[in-house]
Image 1 (cartoon, helix red, strand yellow):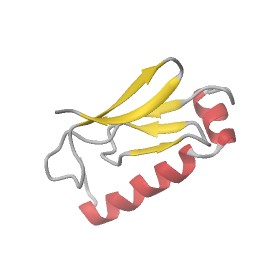
Image 2: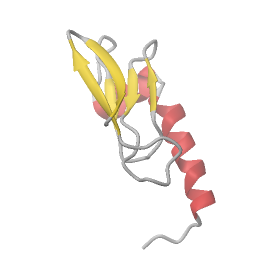
Image 3: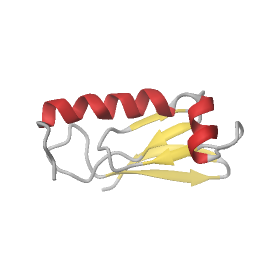
Amino acid sequence: MITKSPEERKGNIDRVHKASLSSSVKKLFFDVQEDEYFIFGHTHKLFLENNSKVANSGSWVKDAERHNTYIKIKNQQVELKDYQ
């Protein structure tokens, strides 16, 4: 059961984003090696940090600032894309 307001939960999403940038967090909790990308979603917060090798696929929810987004990986290049 969700007991916190959307505003309170948004703060948690910001903490997830910040933690995902840490190479030690990625290694400890997800066994992501330094040369690998950590790609996740479901937070509705789109971002791509190539220096930290972290990406979040964003949101399909229409009330999000930017929606219908996905991640494309081709030839070891990671890109954020908009579904048309």
